[in-house]
Length: 151
Picture 1 (cartoon, rainbow, N blue to C red):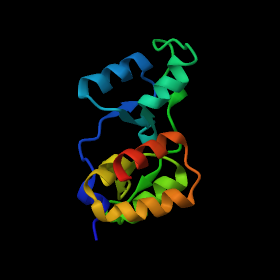
Picture 2 (spheres, one colour):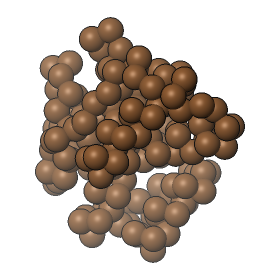
Picture 3 (tube, rainbow, N blue to C red):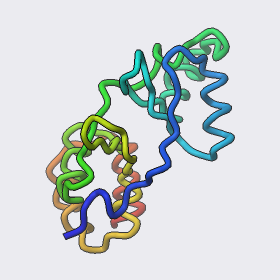
Picture 4 (spheres, helix red, strand yellow):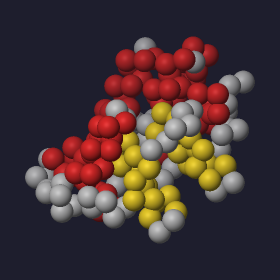
């Protein structure tokens, strides 16, 4: 059985909660990524995603120079162990209604796994994801991933 560690990325980019959104977006653009794991006072406190920026900054016309990452990040951080099965990870995503899980081992950030990572390469996961998708009332953003990569 495949595990989270088999499909996760290990080069996770982080940002401090006290950084403004403009700087955080620049960091995402420079690394060509869609999210940053957020650190606050030496701990991982949340995640800043493209969707957070769209919903909480752009849609509300907030000033990205004056708004801090910690003010708009998604929290709490949803974590999974690298030894967890992909089935466990997908179930956690559906239960928490998130597309990204931070991977933590011994209280240390070791990776990031997304629903797209799992769905893209795991044909044996397709039936499991379909069963869970039928069971949960998912938001549209998650339904799109299931429809595009699974169905």
